[in-house]
Image (cartoon, rainbow, N blue to C red; front, top):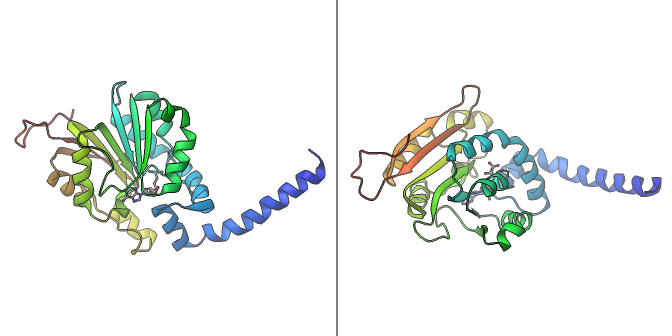
Length: 238
Ligand SMILES: C[S@@+](CC[C@H](N)C(=O)[O-])C[C@H]1O[C@@H](n2cnc3c(N)ncnc32)[C@H](O)[C@@H]1O
């Protein structure tokens, strides 16, 4: 590498940062990218989200209590911070994201697992999950409920693709904290934990449990889909 080559690369990088940084400080542009990461900026956002959401995503993996035979689905995986961990701990990992760019990224990053039939990534939305009924033992979705068109449709679809007794983990920043961030309300719909719990209950989940690590603002909901023979009271959550 000659000094001239290094100088040219630095100039390119500086030019790129000069372009990207003003975009990343524009609240609406950032909000739109969080809702639907696209293009070069979407790739930058994916890296930033992976860093920022790492701790919350790691907690979700622990709460899924994966076993080596599990088929697991992540909805709205974005930059995919936990896809590798899911692959290491489950038999099969699927991902659905409404951003085709994030789907292409996940397919490229996990090409070997996809080729081996251990992973599959599809473009789609939580309101119409592109998988058959009862395809998964576990499902997680993190930082996505603000973008769902309908909590009832999303919860209903998650229940449809889970096996009876299957578990779902849903993590998000509750409305009381989201409201303070001043997010654009035509892009984000802040949700209260009670609203999400009610939608999960209407969809047939039992004993929806909330966990909020003491120093965190995010909340994690864990729910089990009712067993086929359940009438409404019992639960397999422990
Ligand atoms: C804020 S990012 C969160 C990414 C990742 N889960 C995390 O916590 O770092 C939201 C992701 O969910 C996807 N998304 C938003 N609404 C969705 C929907 N209705 N159905 C499926 N994916 C959705 C977006 O494309 C984006 O990749």
